[in-house]
Length: 104
Image (cartoon, rainbow, N blue to C red; front, side, top):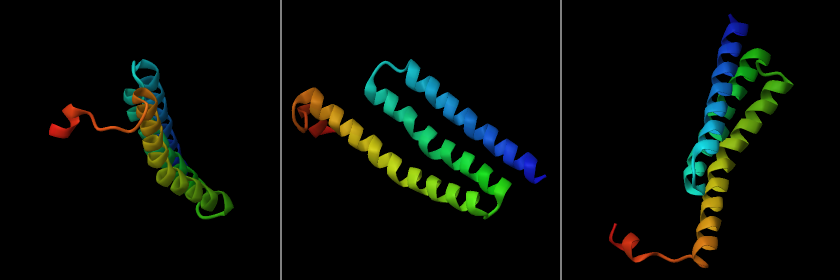
């Protein structure tokens, strides 16, 4: 039962990562692509890490996978935001609020 659950979690994590990769390849703009990076680095990492924990319980590999998943879940949104902000600054030359953004 433990092996079947670990296999199911691993398969689900791989599917999430593959679907995110397809989304990144298909989307035309950077900002659209950034939306597809999130599931791979948070949900996909969580599912794959959960599969490792189910398989190895709380042995050394299980504890290390928990630490890696926590690090990814915390840092991934920050990196995505920083990438979007850097792209916007590069696009407009500086950080500005456009007139149409002030009204919404």
